[in-house]
Length: 298
Image (cartoon, rainbow, N blue to C red; front, side, top):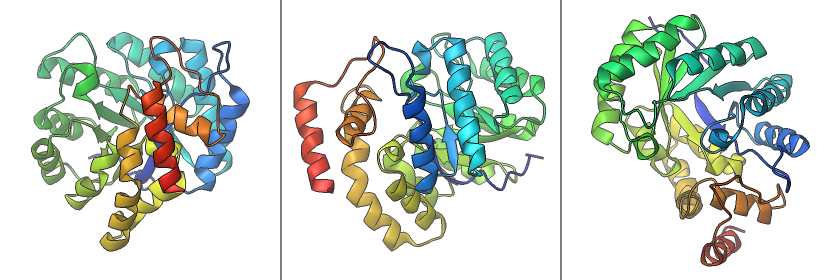
């Protein structure tokens, strides 16, 4: 049976990683961002995912960012699900063990990118990871637009049934037939999270349990409130927030994420707009659109 985790519900933030002009991680700024998240209602922090530009960070940097997240989050009774996935099963196991030792509450493990494994390969990959970190919670991350492969509903359900510590999936496939199949047939205690801000409300309506958000980097209070109201069945209130912040949810992906999000956060005075190559700051037309949007949102 899937491990029961009462805290695994609601809005989690896929944290951006602030960099200084010299390219190094801005530790002080990052700690402030984590505290801001929790102060504004976010109870789950997810460092070192796509939004955190983990693909351009070395292992020591990722461990440092995760350690800072754990230190700040646990002071304020929040949870940390650290991004540990890669396209190497052995490397993922090694890194997942390290974040467990740091005190993380779970791991977010993306589907292997570039290799394009079969469904049997997916099952074997995630199964080996689960067996190697027994009793340590794992959230699958299905994002075909970035990995060029899909974790099917059948594979997700097989993994959920077989391994008690595979406790959730972050679904960013946009395939509602697949998502409904997972929601309808999942074992007890297995959680489904939206991996796309804009589809969160409809996903919760069919049984999802929460959101791993980009938008909550900018507006954590509003995003977490929308998720909580939807989970509580207050649909009118949830829809009101959804449609108010939907333009920002969509604008965060005008260009490659997290570049638009970092520009918005820079405009809000939260960080410097520094990204690591091959990502670059957003273009001037996008800046103009985002500034107009921020003005509309007040």
